[in-house]
Structures are given as C-alpha cells and as structure tokens.
Image 1 (cartoon, rainbow, N blue to C red):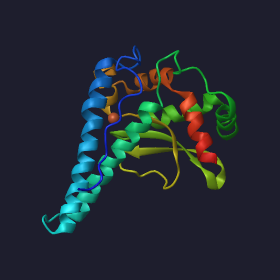
Image 2 (cartoon, rainbow, N blue to C red):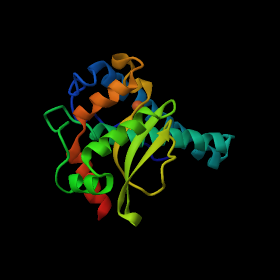
Image 3 (tube, protein in one colour):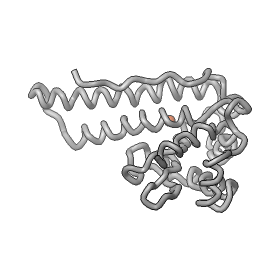
Length: 203
Ligand SMILES: [Fe+2]
C-alpha cells in the first residue's frame, strides 16, 4: 500500500469564522471539498502503485495531473485553514513585528500589500488562489495566483498566506460577489501564523 494523505481537522470550530465565513461554508468546504482532494490524491497514488505492480494500465499523464490537482488542493487548503482564525481571537487586526516590517519594506505599507493581494485574489480567472510567497534568493515577499490548484506558482518558494477564491469558498454566503468575500476575509487573517511562516522561510 502506498503512503496516504489524511484530512487534518480544522484548528477551530466550524462556526468560528462567522459572521465573515459561515458555518455552512466551512463545514462543506472542509468535510466535502478538502476531503475529496485527500481521497483523490490517495486514489492517484494507489493507481500509480498498481501500475508499477503491473495490475493496472494507466494514462500516466492524466494520473499525474490528477495527483498534482489533488495534492495541490490538499496542501493549499491545509495552509488556508491555519492562515485564518476567529475575528478578535487571533484573526484580523494588523500584522506586527518582523512580518509587518517585511511587508512594509517590500510593499511600501501594509495597506498597499492588502490592496495588491486583494486585487490578485479578485482577478483570479475562474477557480483558484492568491498566494503570498517568500523568495530567499532575493529576500523578498512575492505575490502569485494559482489557477485551479495545480502548483503553477514559483517552485521552492514557501507559501506564507493564501486565499481560496473558488466559488465553494464563498458562494453560499456572498453569491457571485467575490470582491465582498475578499474584503471580509481580511477580518479572519491569522497574522501570527503568517509571521511564523515568514520566520521559518527566512531561516
Ligand atoms: Fe477550497
């Protein structure tokens, strides 16, 4: 049997991000969508194992694309959950310390960073993500978009902050108003988690 991925529990209650993200969205998003990526990733690994054993003929290109899509979804959601916290209980407010200094140095100000990150999130074509990364080579924070959830972002750059802008992340509450969701989402950003990820990336 190949090694398998497992669905991590949410680090807070399903209703913890209300009123900004509803309990219904969080429940479906975690238990159905994220779970489906874990199941899909394990199914792709299993297919590859069977192909090696000679008991299954596979389309290697399609299977590896499935693996990338599902592992991408699993990894991105795992970061996304921990990038958030209940408003006023670790979520929202403003970044502090080294993270605030770094954002200010690289983007001009926290407000300019938030504006550009929001622009990136709102402008993702179809389903996808906006990410904040750190590039050690140029000692700089970098923004990118991910289409769907295949890892099209710059290789090796660790992800510090992520926002899911698939419709399943907001439609039940915000309908087609992605911009409203993105603006509300800042109220649940866990800056402490982002700061810890930056410290680890810089080391
Ligand atoms: Fe999602």
